[in-house]
Length: 286
Image (cartoon, rainbow, N blue to C red; front, side, top):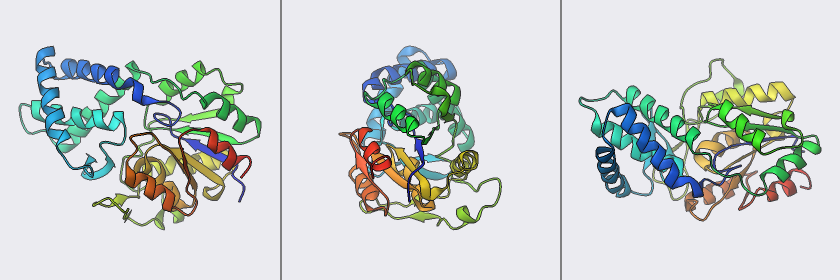
């Protein structure tokens, strides 16, 4: 079936976050100092302890949110930084912090640090998006990050038809839950899947993410089968859309985890590349 809708993740997919890690972690430590009322020296000490403790965990270790492991902590700079943040917040608490409060605090720190440290766009991002739009494709950016922040960043890209690139922020791709309204297509998704090389399940029933996808399909008249979803983290961006029947595309980096590449390649409509340019072959010429 022709692909008439393309859904991009933002951080790590349209951007190149590898260059932003030092600044991201500095902004995160600043936020921790403010929110936890700690001195700069104390935050640095606790951060170094987090690097030692979290860095000693197995490669399969994941980011836990609301009682579920929802993503690998080493998949990108943001998840790695969140894992360190979680350790600092938990160990700095004067009493046992409820899991819900810990989750909220880590997300709040991440959002503040993310806004303070924009990553550069991939060099081919503008041309690829402009090409897709000029060919009449529906283009959406669906991200866990704040939609207004992403919108301002896309304005800076000076796209030829910025008004035809729609941003859906705070997608909750990491939230394992049921959607607000029952859906036959969502009900058919299994609870989880197994991936070669990973010793834990990948949870698929991400209801908030599903709601975003269903809303954009309703808006543009597309469907799962006519949509390609492009992201840089298999577990967060691609696993559930693939279960719905979407075509998927993994943007790989030098540090992309091996099991993610194997999982993406094993999907019936999966693909991967190091650049966004390859998407044009799949969507326009494939």
